[in-house]
Length: 419
Figure (tube, rainbow, N blue to C red):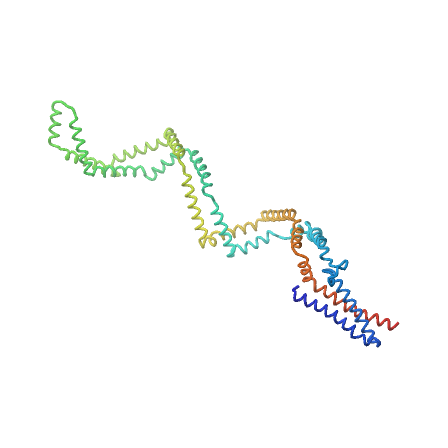
């Protein structure tokens, strides 16, 4: 009740008491008449009743007129006992553990949670909360702590990997994609580029002349070589060899060239034999293990994880992430869970159990909370609070006392006159 209403009721009680007192005084000159006696008796009884009720109501909260009359100021004197009684009444009568459990057992928490989730999952507030939570989870991931674990697992998987099992697959893919022909064409191109250089031609000419000069022969063969070297110089020899190499390369480039087909067949045969070459597989596994033993990818993994974290945050912040991706997933999950009676029953049972455990552990805190809040109030504040909430009814006791006393006074004086 507001202070304005409280003041109004207090004024009404005071006015009723003043009316009775004024009526009693006003009827004194007319007490020799019948009506004067009757009215005086009524006002007298009303004044006594009003004063008695005023004393009783005032004695609840303070000493009347400030006099330390025994059994007055009941609320301040019995404050601790009243608080203890309130707490006992809350814990043992109104809010017992069983009453709370019985009340909770009748609440369909799961149904309410699903309804609330379906209603609020598409709201702007929930959207922002979920996105913020996801971003927080992503940012709290410590890449430096996770990297060693990833490195350990990665190395373990790679060490256990047997290259011999995958070598045939790799060779089949190599042949299927015609990497043998591409490798041959690459080598031929490099040879052609190398042979077409002037420096190569000069080097080949010098090498040919040196080779001819170092040939040791006798008789006619020596004479023939001397004559050939006198006719052909380094430049001509280099040019001849260069042309031979380039023509040979061009012939191997022709897909229908028999030499090319023979070479490719030989390469294919070697590759097929490599599929079952245990020594090659063992050597490749040893090479793999040696590389892994000296491989330290932790820093690379940390950088990669940090990059992935940033990409994940950027993706979450996109406008279409929640609406187009996450919201449909959440809606479907809620719908599927809601229609699964077994899971719903388990969830409801778990919620009820957790609430029951919470009530069991914290029931005593109800009274403790009430006690702490009441103890924070001084006597003046507590009295004012009680008067504010029930003062109107207390003031009406004073009014009723005055009115009832007046009516009873009239009745008693009337009886005296009659008898």
